[in-house]
Length: 146
Image (cartoon, rainbow, N blue to C red; front, side, top):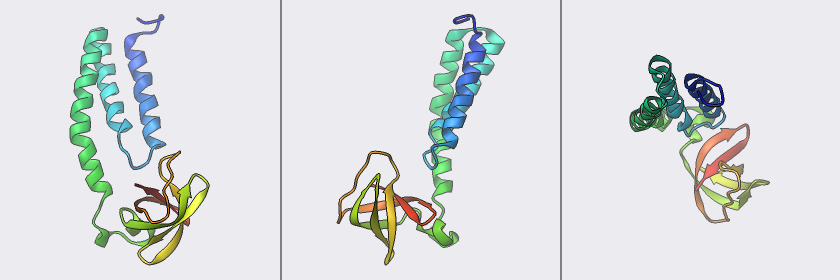
């Protein structure tokens, strides 16, 4: 017990928090495998009562999940362009920054068309002339990465 809370309950809370975090970080698929690892730690802690065993289970499961699940998910997300249509077909394409792209907006050229743009990662800025990659389309705005 830590602060009067069973170790398995702390791991369960961590698993739920990581799963919720995964929902709010689209496209990265990093917190999802950690949520699965925290769930395995929850089971170990509940069955054995060992905090050290739960920690070892978390580390081991995290390594396995990130090594196995993340590449599978990334491959699934990056479907061939031929099978995608509409704005989904733009994800993964290269774009040219026409006007500085920052948290306030900007303009990019994707496949001959001009789009409004914002950085996919908060706080990032791209200058005119840079090549970027389309990470997501949000309405009529392209979210781009370096």
